[in-house]
Image 1 (spheres, rainbow, N blue to C red):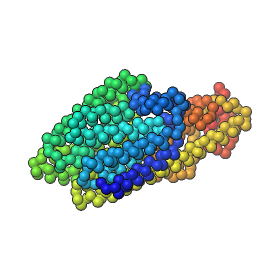
Image 2 (cartoon, rainbow, N blue to C red):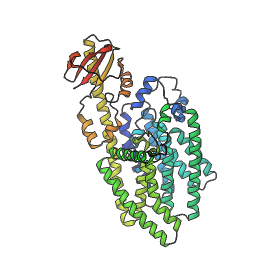
Image 3 (tube, one colour):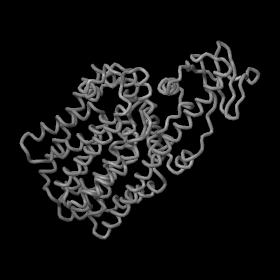
Image 4 (tube, rainbow, N blue to C red):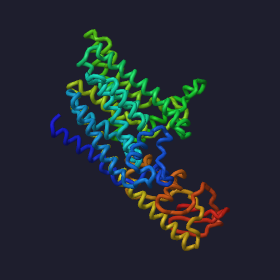
Amino acid sequence: MSAKNYSVAALIFLFFLFPLLSIPPYFDDYARYSFQKIGLLDQGRFLTEFIYMALGITNNPLPVDNHATWIFVSGLLFFGVVLLVTKYVKQSVSTTILCSLIFTSPMLLENLSYTIDTIGMALSITLSIVSAFMLRSDKQHSLVLSFFLLMTGSFFYQASFYVYASSVILITLVDINRRDTKDHVSFIFKSFISLLLTAIIVMKITDIVATDAYVAQHSAFIKIDNDYLPSITNNIRQVNFIIKESLSSLQLACVYLLAFLSFFTSLFNSHKLLKKKKYFLSVLAIASLPVSIMLVYLPHVLFKTPVIEPRVFMSFGITLASMALIISTAKFLKKIAVIVSVIFILSSISISSAYSSSANYYTMRSVSLMNLVQSELAHSNVAYDAKIAFVGYPNIQGPYRSNSSTYPLISRLMKDPFRNKWVARHWLNYYGYDYRFIMNNEFNEENVIIKNPKFLISKEKNETYVIKFR
């Protein structure tokens, strides 16, 4: 890979990550700043918390401006993977294209939005990919090193399991004509053993360390009974919905085209290997793509109450890279693979930019609206620490409305404090409002004490002031 291609990769990552430098805290971050507690140790993701301990911040007020640092470090980690992959992938589509599909996946925008979690998320995905490539190296103790890296990545974020497995498939596709059956069997077997041992150890340690009920609630498997298949089917629908909502119309078209072309190219490659009597490799050629796609769904669809949000689909970009790699093995389709991939990558950069401007605009308007509410309450001699509740949602237009209609992922990533009651109290605390937020859906017109063009405020029972947005 030439210095020119390295520069292109660096620019792609820069344009994708740069807009995220200025976004406001993500919804979980508001709670952490409110409680002055990171809280990842309770969820079994203790290595991220250890980073903060090492920096000496855990016992002090959490820093507000460290997100820019973690975005910068994430960019360095991503570029480090490019250097690693370049040494290994020496054929087919450009390494720049493959790595850009992996690291500019729109799904990663949520992972990189967390002020506190970003560094852990970035380390999780990069360590998992490096772990898979390390296992493929011929270096001494490669299995031990791979196992250690995967386990480390898993303690940053458990989704690293699927990233690792998808990376193994990507490497297998790269090597399918470069290594013999014995090498492939050995690699897949070692990968499986490494993944299995890591999963067992991580689950055992997490059971001991993780005290947050959230973890147990969302990691319980569906019971095998009459509702087993309907529950899985429903979860699959949810995954499909989230993926569809996370991609623009243009990106969906790119994904469908990549999937269609890669499927038929896989059949063609499998047939060629079958004619050469390379039966195991023929099976690998046709099975790798479906397994990679399945890893986007697993194990989320097997959980009783799964967390199905963009952040859990960290392996999605690797699956796209596998599709592009498969298509590029057919010479007459290679240019199509590159063009479609570039369109997808550019669209991801556009989503990142639109998301940043939308988040900042919406936060600015929300704070401005809350300042107006505070002013009206103060003018009516309402105490600064009065109990308040929200009914309805503010009508905020501007770039948020146009951007979110074009890119539905934006409305999913932005947790409106007026819509999300869990976020509301912590959002108020973060921006310096001393009001005590409570859950209350009551609003009686006869109790209205303040009328404003943007909202009405009623005084309900228990001295609660309910703000109803117009």
